[in-house]
Image 1 (cartoon, rainbow, N blue to C red):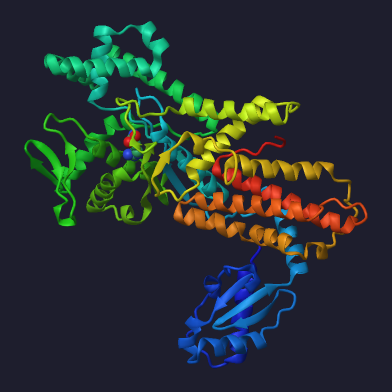
Image 2: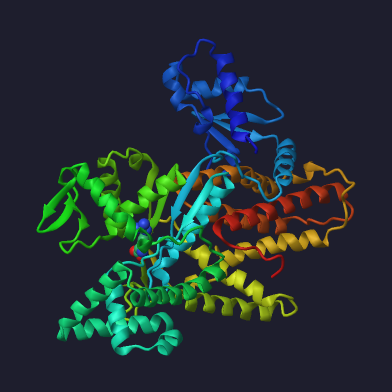
Length: 573
Ligand code: ARG
């Protein structure tokens, strides 16, 4: 991995000690202070001297001036002083060679690391609800979680991705009651999740008139809980039907899980949790229900048991947290869930802490994301404000196919490329903005292929591939890196050299959008380079070899970045 920043920081530290041998209390690592100047004309890196001013008891401009004069590292960079800043201009030839050597020798692993070795991260994402059709309200969690898993894998962590299915609760009793009264096997097999929803809606409508139905629903749920054969068979069948639909979506997206242990998995593990809470003196009666009082912490009580003894979402999440710790011994457990559930997770973590599990304070993390609306309206199945994922992905693939048919009618694997590009558009636009931003879903932006989009980045990557395919064999030629001594190439090299840092930032902040930015910047910079410079120049094999090396490095890194987002990069499109 290139340690350009580190190298410069070390040189600065040395220079400070030469100029100010008595200096004390300097920051340990100066690399954190290095900035990227807003305008490339001001250099490739800038070092503000304001923090040093206190330690050295001199004005920042004086310090900057004296350091600029003494800074000696011609192979690395030259320094200029500008006010209180030290601006660094990299030695372009060396920088190009070092960067390209490093990137190309990493293959598709530029930016990968081992810092996660020996550490386990559980990621709870997607976590769809049984008997509900997979809709855009679960798109963010699915693609965010998938991307985070890939990022952590890339950094050497062992990841456990968990689909914490919403498959427990009285609604399943109601659904069975409705099915027994009005449903039949064939219609459910054919209608799938939609038919289950219809049954459930009808149940609620009729129960409003006829309260005895509620009793029937409860009785069926009790049967599920007690392991009644018929009840379980119907329940599992509902689950299979839902999962079969969801799997189609996961397959198109390329999303995978290590575990589908959902809420029902913990049904037989909640009693022990309730016992433990009670043994630890944490349970309180509240109108017949059992709760953990959290008033002291400014939160409403955490409901553990209803007055009829039924467990709740929290109870099962407590059991799940303990199970995951005991099973995976995680170093982090991430919950990629909308911020509407912020209180739920704060309560959950607090209760675990009160139970004496200190790790809840440091190892559990709610990775929250913004709300999804559709053209300004809150999602609602009932009001028809809803977009289903299968529908969205189908449209995206159709659009991609239409464009491919028009622009590249001779492409061989058109259907496959259309899938990659359609998914690329949807995934990219979902991850593009910081995760906490609300998303107002709009068809035109989800299916946009121009400007800062997945397809644009994919297209640039394929363009690099086509340049490489057209190149003559220059394996015996030593690249002339002076050919890269121009602003466009240097900008690309800088972006390449910063990519490993971006991956780490994305991991630290759980922010795949940083990687969207990185691949988009690379794509734009490459297109600029491509328009201003001829890559293949017959009369100049050594320069061509350098430009090809740059092209290959860009292709590899874009491909890596896209794959960390969960987007494939077609060879040709
Ligand atoms: N199924 C829930 C929902 O759709 C999300 C579950 C998140 N994970 C968890 N362990 N609570 O809202």
